[in-house]
Amino acid sequence: MLKSNKGFTLIEMLIVLTIISVLIILIVPNLSTRSESVHDTGCEALVSVVESQVALYHLENGDYPETLAALAADDYITEDQTTCSNGQDLNYTNTDGSVSVPTAIE
Image 1 (cartoon, helix red, strand yellow):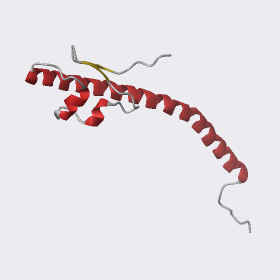
Image 2 (cartoon, one colour; image 1 turned 45 degrees about the horizontal axis):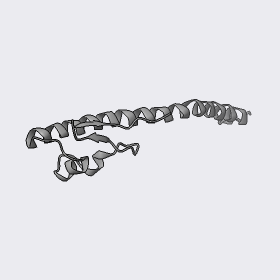
Image 3 (cartoon, helix red, strand yellow; image 1 turned 45 degrees about the vertical axis):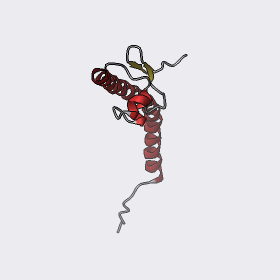
Image 4 (cartoon, one colour; image 1 turned 90 degrees about the vertical axis):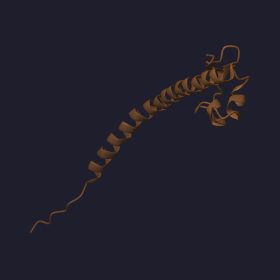
């Protein structure tokens, strides 16, 4: 009688591991570029939110806040809304109420 051994052979396991390794090598670099675009999109959204709160402050008080910290002190934004998720502080100009993200110098 022949015995039926079920399972993977060593060659089959090596082939599966090779395929998984190749997929990881192809996917991991794409993930790092995706996280940069996620941070950029998050910063753009944060700028829009803070700009709208600056406009609301201007409507209610007749003047722009001196700093983003002053805007946070008056409870229009929270302290963590002055910094993007990638660690960059937002730029704020109190003469016209504009908010922006610093551009990277390359």
